[in-house]
Length: 610
Image 1 (cartoon, one colour):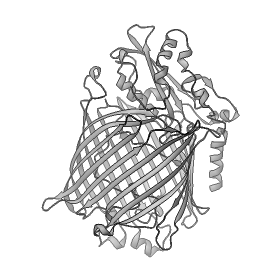
Image 2: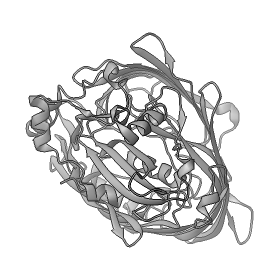
Image 3: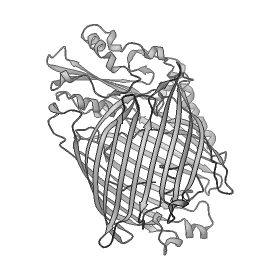
């Protein structure tokens, strides 16, 4: 199985070894329309400065204010293959490797791109809507970059012609994650099946110590399904090797499905999602008596939320990016365990708690975007949110018979400093109030994300530094989980240390060095990091606070023309470990997904600190 998986990945990657050798000198070529004669040439020369990729962050706003309010005469779609240059469509790279890759890849179909447009012929042209649309196209996993151009129609004076250019990635991908020769996970996927934007993934797992020694899974994602004016995404799948809730062993079977209507633009009226899943363990590792006592469970969960963008239909001709917007949302949720481990049938454990209830939320927000490079990507455009949002949440829950009201507040703000530094601040506070008594299970979270401006070291090396500071605290805990060391807000890669805590402070430092040269289409980025987390144990005074740290480094690489994510080799050194555990660790992962959260508007939720 492992050999066939490697052969599949080799067939995917080897034909592409000569792909994406488009060097920096060619990338600096003139925008392709600027080479044309007549009106299109004038248009290209006038917008070259705005359309060309810039090293400095640039606002995602198109320079088309003079076209505001005019009708759209025509829309031309230009989907480009992964061996084309979106800024010079006359450039086509050809060789035997690309010919093989083209035989395996189907370009995005024109009707797929049209389904993802927020406007059509005859509509009024609104620059902010078009700006949102360009960012939305660029956000699709099967599209590397997108560009929307508009100009006065030479055929119909007073109207607007639009050109939509998209560049595909090679959508056939895969990943392998191995821990020695005895345990491995792999995936083979097609992210743009037949050029329709559909994702199909087949997954497998092998563990010599598991019975049976293999697990399988599959997932289907139908994107951009049009239902009248609604744009829907449908996801469904199954797996037989999910990690179990407590011990993390891959013996959970699950089946899931969800339908989502995303908030694709600031003018979207409704957004929301519905999801359902069934989870059940099967004994794959332990003696039967141990499994039944500590690991066997079965549960179902369902979730539904709906949000309304207040003032979505406000007159677009007078709209601007500084406008403060309002959003209201409601959510209902249900989780029920039909079976839990015998040990916890008479003893409460937060991992196996039944819960149902609803949440209501009101938000004000303002969100715009900067377009920049070399944050998590390796030269492709990335969209970063700037602005703020503030919200209040209330609701009611029934958790294992404890009926309580929930109240919460949250705020988030992000901005670019004048010198190119980026800062994002997050604050969340929430708690539960029974009908009698004081607040319970109060949660406080404060987080700061910061990265420095992109600094050129020499002609081929760039550097950017990342800093994260997080503080989390529980007040009057009762039913909710404790703060954990194995958390996204702490040291998630640490294994074998269960440190339930009431207070946690984490500092993460990382310095990344991007190399602009390409080797077989891949760019490299070595990095070094230091993480430290201080935890005050559950029920203990502050003087009992204990620190845990990790330092290390590694290298990441990625070919931006391929759909699968970043390949990462990472090494850790742990100065402090428990007896019987190693103080070093090495991980090799493929298809690692690094991405900034680009949407302030999400479903109503509790304060999540793990």
